Length: 290
Ligand code: IPD
Ligand code: CA
Ligand code: CA
Image (cartoon, rainbow, N blue to C red; front, side, top):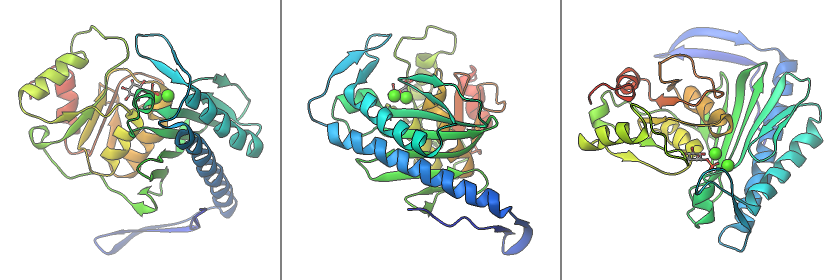
């Protein structure tokens, strides 16, 4: 459902008025249209996940040993494209299975039709549709929907993050040793200093719980919802993190590359945390002891 976006935003801190912004009503109207397209496209993709889940579908392999693509990935991508191209035919699209549909536009939709395909192909209901929307190179909206848990995460830059329309916040843990983390591993083993297995081993040896769900978009949303305190991964693509990283930031968290610098989904490394454990986790991923 389309929600009303306020034209006036009032910021309070401890009950005190801090700031008040009057937004351009035309901009608000256009954002509401973009949000409606985003949610419709997400739902259309998710309907294909539900349709194929646990049924018969074709599976083929991409580069790597178990880097799968299923008939459902293609069907979800097609359904998502239909919505976006009907409503914004002049917008740029970057999508995992099709690649780029280059347009001369400020708006770019970044789509993962199924994030967690290996889970999907094995009947594990931890997978989702993930769609981020960039304007002039800045992520402005993102939606991640897992139809099997009926969890829709959404964020719009400057407006916070929600789970099924309820505002969400990151956790407030302050030390990695007392945190619950999540990570993922690339399809092809990455043999590098401070690689995925070394960082994982170091944390596990110290008794820090590190989960591996198999969907980076869900990992990020679960950091946003405070279920995890932090997430790191060594090799992601733009479509894995486009929506989720904005959802974490809008839930009050911090997202950077491995140097602790400004995050771009066009480079492989990601560290996303509640903000409080961020510097410590950056150091650990770079070789420091837990
Ligand atoms: C994968 C998942 C996984 C991550 C991989 C991704 P896919 O995406 O997000 O959690 O570890 O690096 O490629 O292939 O299921 O869309
Ligand atoms: Ca993915
Ligand atoms: Ca995918």
